[in-house]
Image (cartoon, rainbow over all chains, first blue to last red; front, side, top):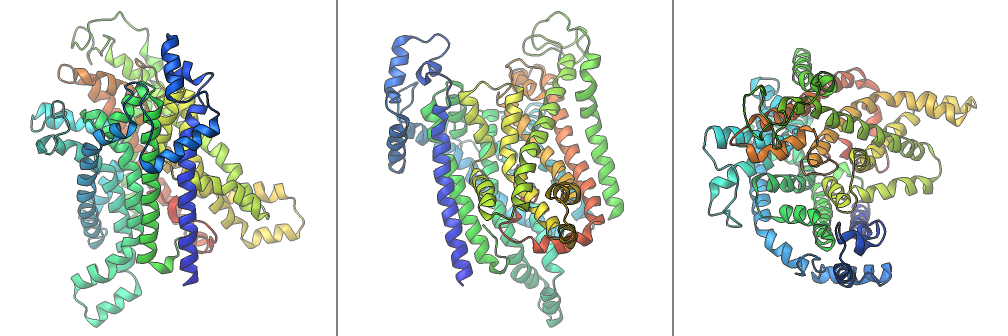
Amino acid sequence: MSGVRSFVARRLLLGAAQTVAVVLLVFALTEALPGDAAVALAGDQPDPARVAAIREAMNLDQPAWQRLADWAAGLPHGDLGTSLVSGRPVSQYIADGFAPTLLLAALTVALLVPVGFGLGVLAARHEGRLADRLISSVTLAVYAVPEFALGILLVTVLAIQLGWLPPTAVGYGADLLGHPAALVLPVLVLLARPVCSLVRLVRAGMIDALASPYVAQARRYGVPRARLRYAHALPNALAPAAQQLARTVDWLLSGVIVVEALFVIPGLGTVLLNAIAERDVPVVQGLAVVFGALTVVLNLGADLVALRLAPRTGVAA
Amino acid sequence: MKQLRAGRFALGLTVVALPLALALLGPVFAGEPGPRAASFTLGDGHWLGTDFVGRDTWQQVLHGGRPVVLTALAATALAYLVALPIGLVSALTHRRWLEELLMRPLDVLLAVPSLLLILLAATVFSLGAFGLAMLVALVNVPDAARLVRAAAAEAAARPAVEALRMQGETWWRMAFGYVGRSMLRPLAADAGTRLTGVLYLVATAAFLGVGVAPDAANWAVMVDRNRTGLFVQPWAVVVPALLIVGLTMGANLLFDAALDKGGRRRALPRATGSETGEGPVRRRTEKEARP
């Protein structure tokens, strides 16, 4: 038991260190600006008033450690600073873009789990036969394809040539739920990569589990097939899949940025890309901290869940 | 199953052949750029039409593959250039603090999503192709170093190393002559999967406008910039998008088939080795771990 406890303690420590590292890394961004940060951010023709305003807004006349301390102290309260371009608080930007992104991510995860597990179990049941070969080959092929290339091809065929679905979400604003047809392609594109990796993992885990001695023994006892498959074999295939599920959040993040750009959805990814284009450093930093911390927490959770599901594997931190 | 693998290998080779040939040899056959025409037109001597500023799409396609492929190759090579010494030293050193010092910071870096890191850097610096390659290499270093360390630790625990040590061989001889050589196979397998991941990142970053000029001849940039004309002139988008799909898909199929063959051949020594990989060797080095 002490082994498990020390693993949990170490994993929590690592998570804390990762969060601190994310904050430091994001803060280091302004320090990395060449020359005078205010001049560098003011654009091609720096106008003295604008430079002064930026210096004032970012407290650039204070020493770096003091700014870090102020900024980090504000983070737990949701105070992420103010935008250089509009002067609005960064938390407002996040609140605006949150709904569409959350909707996309939630829909994707909600579909990802049943589809990923279903196809994975299906492939494992028919190992080596046509269904398995088809699923394995397709998942392997689609796995590596960047979302934007896949997405634009789907748009060309399904939206423009066949006219079944709208090509972008332009004009719907944040009210995506009212226009479900506009959501089909973005979610499909977002699903493509995570589903492939999940299917491959579940398939491998199920094949291992179904070939194990305990399943053979249960079969000899006459345990019904379905019960054997879902109550005995599947939980053991779950542990690596749970970890992978959290890692797909990393992918979902990059996927969401690309998909929002591709389908013109006003979510957090669009906010981030706009802020980058305008070199609005506080907004970029605020979003990066939120995304980074989210990734750390989800990975931490997944490792702990995986430990609970399969304690003997001792997933080392 | 063997037949299936051979089939997959052939399929991967066929799919990747055309984009790769275009990327590597395209610029040779491109010739001089002609005069600019109206944007997004079809016909008139341009058999794939013109792009958003009226350049010949086919000519852009011929030029556009090389930056993608070369940046990806450079990034993969750079990642290993950094990861190899870190992984090797931390696996072979007997000083615990040195190993911790080398590997722990990487654990922390693993937490940051790759594309986010690249976008962050793009806010502050104006990256060129080389800058993009450096960044993509950087986000790959933690994972690569971890894999190198695991492979080296496994090889260094073999009796052969013990024998070399008892014989009084030098550290260099053991590190490069034996451990380095027995790592080649797992490294080659990892390099394949890493290259497909890097291709993904390089193309996606270019699509988002990182590390490329806004009118660069680059398949990913072409997809982005010519999107506005998708209704009028789809070829300027569809052809580069198809080439990117072919490149990434084919590369993954090819490397998977090749890697599988290698796996079968070294199945025996690995079966014992992978179990003894003690210490913080996580199962994250699996190809599914990171994009």
